[in-house]
Length: 242
Image (cartoon, one colour):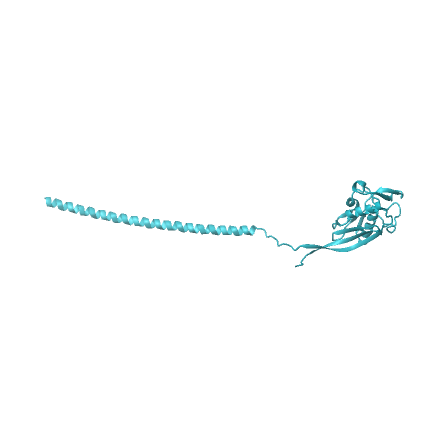
């Protein structure tokens, strides 16, 4: 009886061992599968990350290209321009009354008129260019005409000779005269009916630059003559190389 019991006991132990072995085998298989699955998942995640990084890099590159396209094109530096002058008219009158105050007034007014530029299409005003013709502005009293043709000493005496000289240069240049007034008495530094008197605030001499170019005025004098020269300004590209 005892021997039979021992045999059964051994059989049970063998069965338990077999079951445990089977369980261990199954557990090992499950663990290996999970490990492979985890590796595959990790591999897939890494691949997705790499793909994402590559896509981001490409997006950044595309964005950089777009940003570069937004940068405005900086124009190449234009060659410097130079101005050339072409004389269109010149006129000279003689100073018969060489009183020093008169000559000084003419010289002062010429400094204001010389190198004055009249833009194309603009109207020139003699009074606005010279300004008030009084002693406060540096002008002196010299002989001139009143409204009745009488010779009197007035501030800025002599300035009508400049306006008259300019008037004749404007006529020669074919410019449009928009305002002009004759003296109350004949003056002899210009031909008859070719004078232009001025009185600041009331009588002005004006002309319009009706050419296609800006015009520069050259005004000079000595103790004998007054000369007004008109030149049109021609702007050209300076392609000169050293």
